[in-house]
Image (cartoon, rainbow, N blue to C red):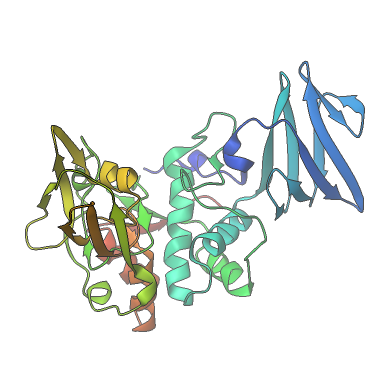
Length: 317
């Protein structure tokens, strides 16, 4: 049986990645607030305060954003955290707008189910708040990109989460698989083996001719690397460079590669990588979801394609 308590009615989001900051500027109710901290107290427009809560505020520093609900400033030493508290379904609408932007409704609905599932799977991932506003959790930019279609996608999937044998799935998704999705074990050393993730071809992305998802990167290496690919695909899962063995996630970080679907050749001055796709390749491919929605797939079919053997279930209110 699903644990309904794990799907909160209100969501706490750590702004600026939930990191401590030393200065912020916000606007609320026609008033500007300049905020610093000292000795465990906030200093707001020159006045010491234990805590500051602003309603429907616009943040100017340390990041720019228009945030619904409450913006809460919590001091710690000579710095403070900024947390946005808002209703769950409004959070979902803003997440899918931030993550996918303009997309067909059914693709946005698939993303909405996953955004909600993330909350259920992780609970308060960061201790005092459910998620940060960065890619570490789910991209959240407040009202910045949210339109009526994003609110509709959240509304029409209200309370729906993706489960496997009654439990919320591990929520992983990426911008474009480049034609091949894969399992976590091909991305992270010691990656989990979960039955709903799979390795194989995503035909829609394989045939995608969108130039935005192709790329070229030069790395000034003195040694020509060797790679291992997932059988039958161009996706690299390991690289041997000198005495080092790098796994897919490490390869992308080391050389700044958008994905591990690439060909390469070595020159006298370094290595040229030419590839396609963006992201780790596990779980929902956002570009693939968009292409499938354009072909007439509904969100349930899209989710079942990327998460095999799963069920969409309604929980909470």
